[in-house]
Structure formats: C-alpha cells, structure tokens
Length: 88
Image 1 (cartoon, helix red, strand yellow):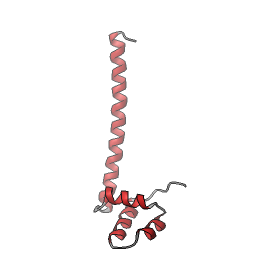
Image 2: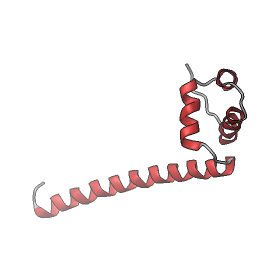
Image 3: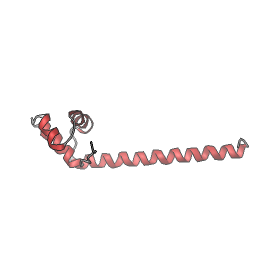
Image 4: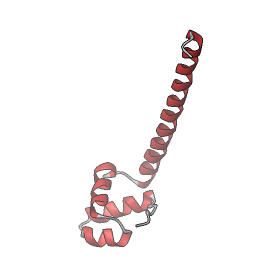
C-alpha cells in the first residue's frame, strides 16, 4: 500500500473527531489509516493543536538533522585523531 502523507491539521481533526465520540472505523476509513495508527497518534499527539503539532514535527526534524551532523563530525574527528597518532 502506498504511504500517504497526512497533514498535521488532518491528524488533529481525526483525533478531535475520535474524542467527540465518532467511531474509529469510520475515521480510519476516511483517512485511509489503520486503527493502530489512530491510537499511536492519540498517544503521541493527544491534546495538541495543529500549530503545536507542526512545531513538534519541525523540532523532531531539526533534532534528526543535528544528530546526523554530530555523527558525521564525530567520525571525522576520530579519523583525524587516528591519522595524527599514526594508526593509519
């Protein structure tokens, strides 16, 4: 199955519909998601507004990029240490 990109606003809307009492099956069918996805969203994003969710996703992406940069720099640093110590 092709993975769909669902916007932050749609996630918040689906969660609010679920909280208001709409059954999970119709929500899942409408958004084309599995019921476990809905529960994962509820666990992760429950009680958030769309702008808060968007900010969270931006911060997670920035964190991912920074971790990658750190890993790259650490590897470069280790290689330079090995070259200077004569191991390579």
